Amino acid sequence: MIKSQKDFFSGLMFTLVGGGFALGSLSYTVGNGARMGPGYFPLLLGIVLAVLGAFTMFYSLVEHSEDGGKIGAFAWRPVVFILGANLAFGVLLGGLPSIGLPAMGLILAIFALVIIASKAGDSFVLKEVLLLATVLSAGSYLAFIVLLKLQMPVWPTFITG
Image 1 (tube, one colour):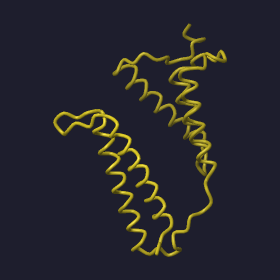
Image 2: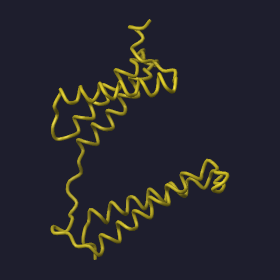
Image 3: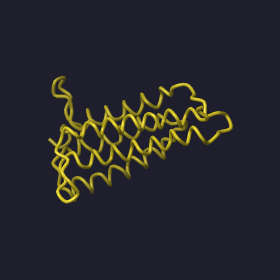
Image 4: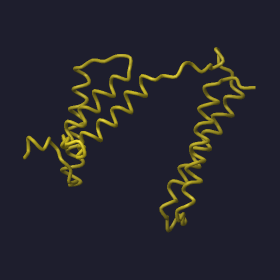
């Protein structure tokens, strides 16, 4: 009998996703530890995820939680804001030439990502969100533009020309 629904169904999800990744990786050359192919890492990662999911499911069958670990209502708000933040990041970073939207660059894309994603939580403090966006923008600029020398727009094209 299931003693914690949350643990059981999260373990089931991990097992199914991990198993799916492991099976999907078999369509690539796996190789071995000395000569890893492109399917080696996804296979190992999928197996580890599936095993962790199986342990979580087992734990849900033997460990009793006080309230029975009932599953609550689906949290739509975080899903919408997190997916929307990632969509906005991609659109702002690269633009949408099909509708005439130019690339807005890395800095504005990160600010939009952080602001939109922070609306997924229960509290929103603009000062903290802007500080986080500033730190992430500076770190991303340093890592991707300065150190890795990636070629991507940093600022909007109408500013840089």
